[in-house]
Image (cartoon, rainbow, N blue to C red):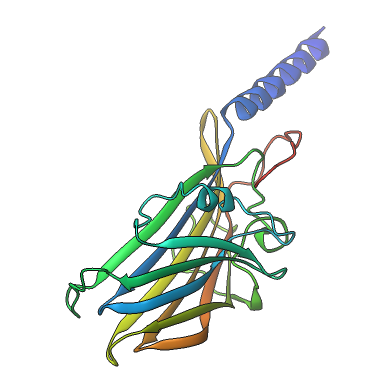
Length: 241
């Protein structure tokens, strides 16, 4: 009788844990692209990497296609391109900013952003092979993680890599242009206490003066942030446009 009660208690506890996990689990991608310039840019064309998985599926392309991106200036024209190796957003504008009201100590900044719920749990352990990244991911190498990068000790893994951006614009010789794109993939749940798993990646480039061609973007990746001893949840298919 005692063995039966212990068994029943274990089954009941495991069932509660799995249900609490399943009912509270949510997965979200958070994306942003920030363009900062200290001087007016004219005749502007950018091809900026958009996060996508190795098969080309992207959590943010539908938002760009629908113009459902927070912070997108009305005079910018946005088009998506799939090169087969990378997904790029083409941004064109006559001037950035149109007013020309910029200076070194007061640069112009535009931040395009979107938060997208995922239909399935995001793979935060191996995003390079299974989740969205800024492609192509070149020269990936592991590095030491910043102190305090994850509140859960022993899980985080950090890397540096490179990717590419195309920029064509006219500007003063001392103009400074910074483009930074960031993507976070996050899973959250509650089993007694709040839990999470996450990865973060960012790519950035700084250009001086006019630019007419491809530039290297420096990339950073922090993966396996959070908790990974969890109940199993059956996977569902993900459909991104």
